[in-house]
Length: 285
Image (cartoon, rainbow, N blue to C red; front, side, top):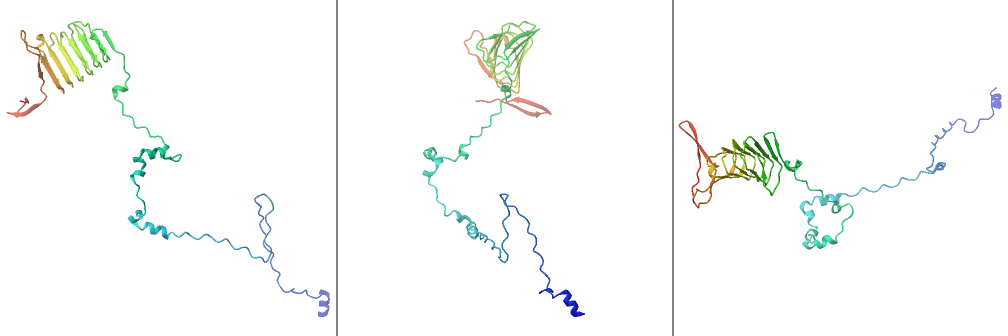
């Protein structure tokens, strides 16, 4: 029977007892950059080419050696002579050229503008001299060479504001005059029923030809008041004012000059018998 089985099955092939090797893994398809077929795989039995050798790391020891020198690192630099300095030689600056985009070609930043004064920010209004009811409004005269005359009457009051470097004349007797924020104003007054008030008007000048009961000066820096023979009884009040001078007329029938009397600015205060006493400090000499 065994011989019959061998005849039917035939002789066993050589190597029938060995396990066949597994098939190679599929190679993924890679398209070439130009859209063509991928490159063929290397033939079997040929080893792949060795990887390219990497560049050696730079040696930083020399750099650290220079940094460790401290102050001696600048010993090898050459000192620049004054003849080679462009900021001290205009001729070198004219011949030197700077690359485009350097700081030499950049425009200088504009200097910050000064803050304008409040009076310059306001638009200057035209001058006016109008009578509204019984009140004269005189405003915005600037550097007028002609005398500005106000034909006021006994019941008229006059308000003068923002008139600079000009002369105003009131030839008739008026009720009262108020002057505010005028610089370099000169005014000639005949007579007033009430008072003349001046506020915040430096370099002020007043001439009284007739009778003015009261003159009040508040925050005036530099004022000159000319009194006539009829206005010697005028009372002058000053507050927060400096450099105020009162000019007295010469005595009638004499050749004396006008006498200039400064208004005191320095005072001394002390307690006497439980009361505060203030006296004028007089400077002799």
